[in-house]
Image: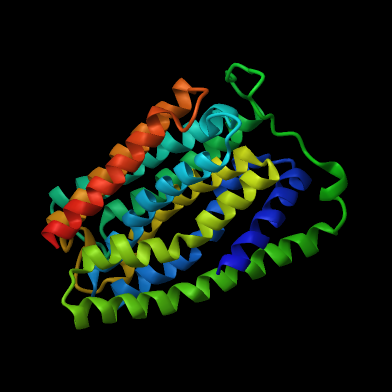
Length: 320
């Protein structure tokens, strides 16, 4: 999984240049979706087997873990605060979209348990909101209404035309798709292992999903983020995490369809609800960091994200 993630970053950076989409858009939509495939398979497999909490917490736990991974990348990039150097309007837009998407399943838990062919309407709304948000991100890339102030530390997204044109575009797309499939296959094995751990060790599905399977399926995001930082593709690094997190919310729509015992949102526990609140809080902190753009170290957002993640994990262990 780690090797596939590293190679995926290289192909994503080249495709971002070759297609003209840019690192933030390609990272936020396509790379984020590709690295999330293992998590999708994990959540859907768990939901189809009747493990609702495992499915939900794997999806939401991935969001919190991956945001914490961004702080790790910030520690490695020592020149300046990563959120400062990778300033991009699309990353802020996707972070706002992520907060909206995560709030919808939480609202569904308090709404009537209405389903259409076993699927809650919120699941359809999640997909519609995601498609609207990604379309808005592409439109913002083409016709930006404002831009972040450029500083000596800002790293602009400049295409490497020589590297991008070495391979035919169909070959590059095929390699990217093949590596994505490898990550998806890993998710099936992780889901089965998580279900066994929950049953055999008597650990709640929320704890297994949030702290075990979520971290395992999030390793591609960690690898691709660190690889992108080493390549100097900072917008790709930040966009890949935020985009992956945004795509992760769609796990819940697919899991709801796979869960045959009713609405998966009404099968969630209070611990699952807490994970959703934690994901919103951590994303809000990241968005504040993207807006304020501190120059030194990991900034207040890095410290706050790590503190929130550790605190959330500690609470889950205590109540699980």
